Amino acid sequence: MSVPWRTAARLAAVLFAGALGGGVGATAIAQYKPTGHEYEPRTPSSTVRDLRSRDMLILAGEHGDVLRRLSALEDAGASSSANGDDAADVVRRTAERTLAMPEPTPEHDRELQAERENWARAHADESKDEPWAQKTAADVSNALRPAAERARFVVRSIDCRTTRCRVELEWPSYAVAAATFGEVLHTSLSCGSAILLDPPVDPTAPYRGWVMYDCEEIRAASP
Amino acid sequence: MKLYVGSFLVGMVATSIGLYPGLSQAAWKRVESFSCRSESPLFAQGDGVSHNSSSDRYLFCSFEEADTFTKTSVTSLNLHGRDRSTARGARGAACVTLWSTSAGGICGTYQDSGNAFTGEYGLTPSLSIWSNPIYGNDFAYVSVIIPPYDAVNGMSTFRGYSVIKP
Image (cartoon, rainbow over all chains, first blue to last red; front, side, top):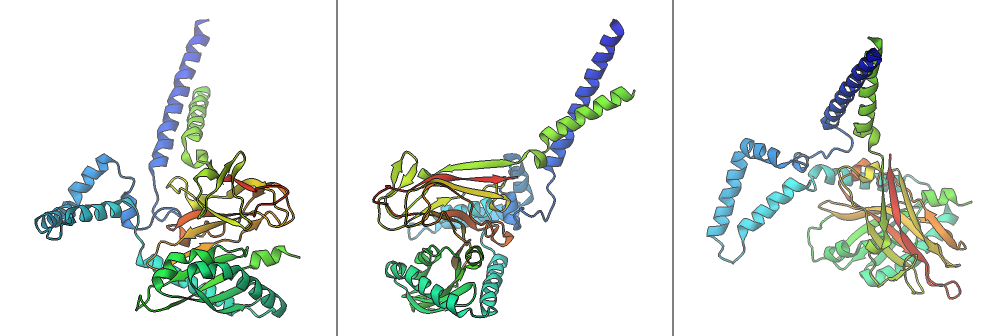
């Protein structure tokens, strides 16, 4: 009887060792973060958002010059707060924000500009299905009418083709456009919508921009 | 000896499967409609938020993105509520507010419960915008349209939404 018990005990020990090995292996794999991962934030500033306190100390050691410059800025702010602003706090808050989350990057701006060109090209490349275009243009006009009053824009033109409509709009200023573009994004049309408004040269001048309505899925689903 | 090696491997594989995040990170989230916002007041009904207006009511619900639950990883978005309008349908879309030096936003196609439809709805809007990696760093939200008050059937509602990632 003693032999099976001894064998069972050995088996249990080996099983436990295997489980331990598996745990260590899985943890090691979980810690491994390959570069270029699809969902990995791409900017250097964002990669530090998950740093733990121990890593922050390492960071402080490796980037002491940055922190010293930050400290110098804080000191300068503290000694020259002529208008009462706490410049050091502003600098610190900005630094914390940079560490915590990725900022809008020039690369992302360029990607969006390219995407907007794609929207425009997709619309321009479509031929015109006259009956659909006329009906949808009327629907767009009706959908935007209540929004136009609230958001103070004027519809300059509506150009519907086969599945897409490009609508030119004019607001009293860029500030109004930037604050109220949601009114043209969320309408009673069920089409997808997209808008990107670049900052103007003259922020006080009337501002023109366009919104694209993509009705491809709606049209494909309707008989 | 074979028995011991086999036991070791069984223990290792079983534990690895249990702990490896790639195999165990499937997840879901459910968001109550009370956390959503509208420009006009909403009623808290027994079956979600509602309104008694004679026109559509636009509702915006945040999608709280995290490094462990990104919008690009979402494979299913489900909106739930009760459509009591015989004239208009409940609608929903997945949208992003662009985080850029330019102002802007994008919404996918709205899914519609249907004008004539009444009853419990479950909408699954297009995820084409959320899944596009170009918008990976932009802010995600759900746009919901609750149909107008129906004089016979009463107020339509929106209960909330759920998201699933594999």
